[in-house]
Image (cartoon, rainbow, N blue to C red; front, top):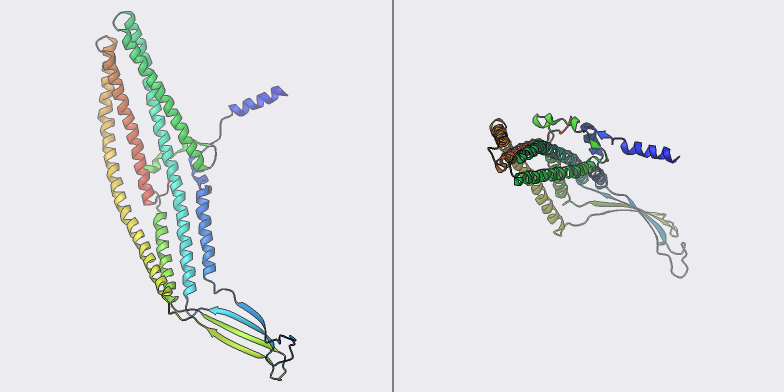
Length: 400
């Protein structure tokens, strides 16, 4: 029994964790709690629209009137009876329809915010994947340098045995090797930290199969829908309907009442009916101040939309310039600088093996090449981030 349990546990531990594809991960974000929160807020606002568009419930008032205090006899006086009054608020304008439309557009704005938050989470996932690829490329470079350095240490030990190199050189090379090992371990921890954030975004403990990530999407255009702009546009429409409703609200509602009095009929005049209409006199400054408040809110929403469009234009222009600058730097770095540094390290390595170059010159050439390769990786990651920012600003889809 114990052996069977042990075998089962070993199988569980040894079994690889399930990896999601990129497409599956992007789809799973739709169920994220932050997205669901905004969806529920949109639905809540839609229900408010139904409430605000209603005239309200009619009221029924029942009252016993003019009963003698001493006897409470309903047949003692002709004024004794029971009143039934039914009242209903009746608007004299279509303001409630405008209020309903205002809240429906607010609900639409919240729905676009939900989609914007979804795209924000997808953009964050892309950003984390870019970080993982950057860190992985850096680890690869460091491991390649470690392999190169281990060979150089062997060469140095041979040179030391023949008296062509001192012990200080071997110690310095081993120190450099230790530094590289520490950097690799640090990068591995950073990768694990990023993976934990990815698990939060996709809402599962699974990891993403990095081979399924379609990196080419960042370089080519995809269908556009600027959800942030759509939300601001819906908000402007909502404020416009709200302003129309406030303008019509300066005409107060009419309260219409119908009453029926059931009497004792002592005077043989039968029951009475009553019809009444009540309307408030809009003499205070409340309605006018409420209208001006709505007017300012509408202008505020228009300015917010205008500012967003202007900022978006400037941001896109800046990102395009950044993209061209980084692409130019990378072209020079890849075609010239790194090639020169690689040749320089090869020449210095051969010279060191012959005993013509010092270990300091060798380490300097190695560090120079490493820094340039690290710079290429960092610039490539930055270019991907810029492309991602361009797609996000344009409202382009981040996966297909």
